[in-house]
Length: 163
Image 1 (cartoon, rainbow, N blue to C red):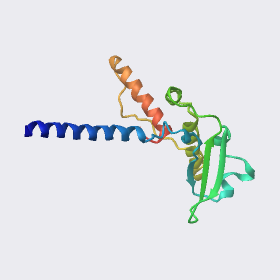
Image 2 (image 1 turned 90 degrees about the horizontal axis):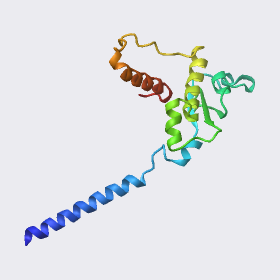
Image 3 (image 1 turned 180 degrees about the vertical axis):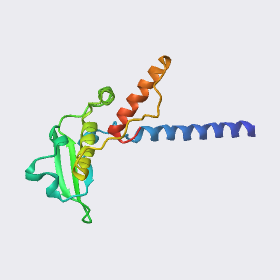
Image 4 (image 1 turned 45 degrees about the vertical axis):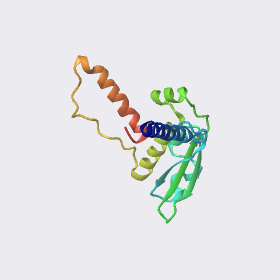
């Protein structure tokens, strides 16, 4: 009888723990599903005076080509300038967001890339690009699909700063 009671109590306790764990997974909102994510500002700190970021009110070329809202502020601690930007166009969600990211035309990714290019352009005078990977051998005929997947992932990582 004791074994039956102990078994029932342990199964019930495990059920409660699993139910709470599953409930907590659904409560936490991920950045992808967060509807406020499309309105958040993206920022970059540039090592220059605020007047040098947008002289005469003209934005640098990478940002001027996009439809974005821009905010320029002095960085705290006299550490340069903070440049904020966010897309004006509605940001796709759900499947459309995944497809836009795969195609490379997601508005937030484009703004993020433009901010990085503006920082590089202002601080060094040119947009810095990594050297091509010459160490990776060209794939054999059977491995072309794998190489294309790797190339696509590497191209996407430039927009997200990670692979």
